[in-house]
Length: 88
Image 1: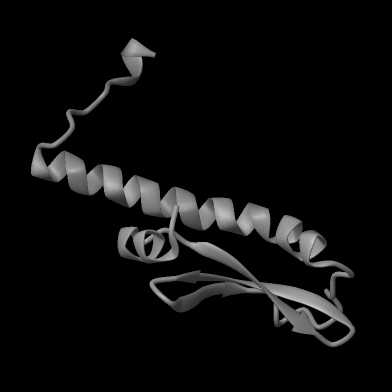
Image 2: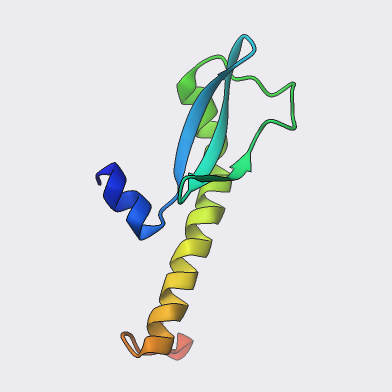
């Protein structure tokens, strides 16, 4: 998905940043930081991949909140119908 489409859709993104001798991460949504790892100065990751992997649990929480909000908005607008848990 291209960057302009991701931002317009409100999808979060993991941004890896050089920090000290290693890397750290932030999660941005609509161009603003919504979560970061800066408060834990001992958490420097040796590689960008390690920082990205460490950010995944928080990223999934942020993404889940976006998807739930989107579903609730669609439900209010009548785009989708409520799916009862009895069908699952």
